[in-house]
Image (cartoon, rainbow, N blue to C red; front, side):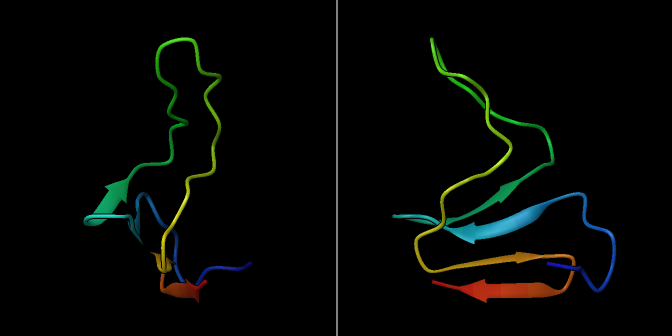
Length: 52
């Protein structure tokens, strides 16, 4: 999905809060880091919004 402007972070609704994340993949103990993150209801990055 093309973005309206470059994005260094994204905001997504999780189970208990809106979470801000950077562009670096995250991984925990014994987890493989992946560059995608789950969202409960919406995600906003670079002016583009998507709802679930």
